[in-house]
Each structure stands twice: as C-alpha cells, then as structure tokens.
Amino acid sequence: MPIYEYECRACKAVFQALILNIDEEGDLACPKCNGRKLKRLISLAFYHTSESDRLASYDPRAQKEDSFYRDSRNIGLHAKWRAKQMGVDLGKSFEEKLDRIRTDPSSVIKDSE
Ligand SMILES: [Zn+2]
Image (tube, rainbow, N blue to C red; front, side, top):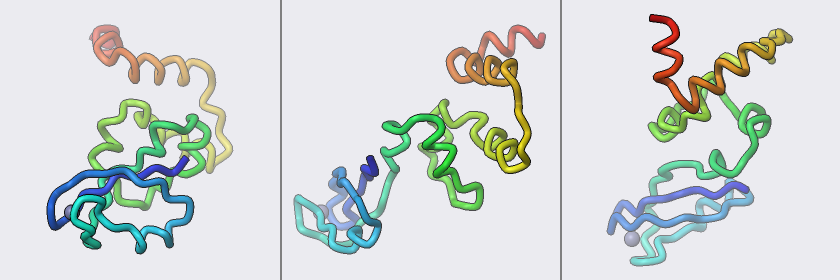
C-alpha cells in the first residue's frame, strides 16, 4: 500500500496520505493550513511491503531518504538487487547472515573479531 508521509512547508504539519497514483500527489493539500507546498518525507510503503516487493520496487539510482538507511530491513537490499540482476543465487548462508545483521548487528561484529 503506497502510503507516504508529507511535511507542509508552510506550517510544518506532518501528515500521511495514501497515494494510489503518483499524479494524485499534486492534488494534495495540508490538512491543517491547506497549503500546497509539501515535502515528501518517507515512503511508508517500505514498512508494509514484503521483502520481494521492496526488492521489486528498489531503484539503485533513486536518491535515498535517510529513513531508507535507518530501516535495517534495507540492509543488503542493494546486494540482493545486484545478485538478482546478474542471476546469481546468493545462497542460504547469505540470507542467514543478512538476517543476523538486520536483527542483531553486534553478534556479527563479535563473530569476526
Ligand atoms: Zn500546513
């Protein structure tokens, strides 16, 4: 579900909007002051989609928001995307390592010491 979060440039109100078609973005207005100058903050879609969905919508050339990097589930997404492009199977051990990095980064660091 493509839910986006916006900040009104006029009154700094933050609100969420469900955008089914990106063209609808131009019709959005701030619910507080009805301002039209909005800044998209994060795509909440990332939080509601499966990994394969995120992989499918991943664009390596797109500029990433800070939230993209803060979401630990995006760790390794680029590597996976590359592997998929090249038709390479990263294997089960990669998946397991990735899971550990995502859920408990310190355990991986401890292992490599
Ligand atoms: Zn506003």
